[in-house]
Length: 481
Image (cartoon, rainbow, N blue to C red; front, side, top):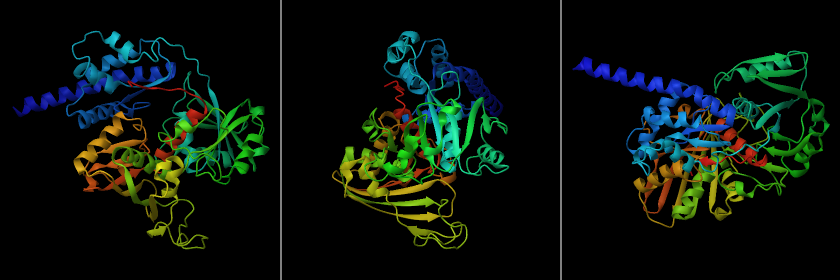
């Protein structure tokens, strides 16, 4: 009996692995040839491994109560690979589950089902033109943005990283920049090949040619001499935060728009994608993607407010240390931040609670906030304690947030975990703006306390990319709707 059981386990695993391996080239070609990104219940399979595909399918049980087999989803991928499709994000998990267990359970016409569910992009021409992108600065966020841009290389890639602007230019600088992109102590090795062209001062990554430009001021660069035109400049230096400073990018030849990867000052729109991205207008030339913490907490707060009505609350962020702190005790203009970051928990202030109102004005004046910097290099935790209008309980709140993570307009911003063992390092590389830790949820009548994880580097960078797509006018629908 034990031998039969072990044999069945091996057979089941081998079947899943074989289907996943058959999916890989189809998923790759769908993106390279059609700019169609495949997901399973919100988890992207772009550049995924066979094991990643199997693990993504296991997530379905969390939401539906039963598992989705790869033999049920593979025909969906196979059919998509034969269709003419415009750019889109297509969730094969949702399609397969609906086809086999939902509205189409009695149908045998898969092709007809897909044409109906994907009518928005099926048999449509791709009319969207590629957009040149420039990274101004190459620090933590800049290098992760580079990874995100490079991973999407292909014939129909819509956002093309053309150049990186940095200070310096000394001997060995180019190799050091490439090495920092190639290896990362937190996010691991780069997924691909990176070489340098010393003569042309360029980095070549996965078939991309990326010009390295040395400059001390944004307005001193002539991008057109490198064949770059109408570029969106992503300023990840944080040196310029107002309209006048960021406007220097628009004085350079070959640029059209600029986005800041930090909170903007003055009248600059602070965009939290999923919350107020509808505020992005074609005529906007300068935008801010707000802060990592604002991006983490605002989508969850918006969802809670719309469902339960937030009266007031407090946000406490337990934040990994950052480059603006000291490795060892030394002078710092800010209180307490001069003390050694790897050795201390440091109480400091955060503007995230007030910044929420810039993206979601309904919460203006309702939130207070503070922060504790802790000795971890990445992944932070926001504790949201709010009083709401409706009495509720833990089960109802968690079920609501689980559904929001999968079926709402915030599905790319909010993720959800039911694990009892998850810790911060498990969330490194999360593409969501935040991950609700359902096991830690506390509800007492009309008081709700949520523990929300966020990769303050990679998750935030994914949010920045979503804003860049909107600035470029790229219409990429999420299907099925």
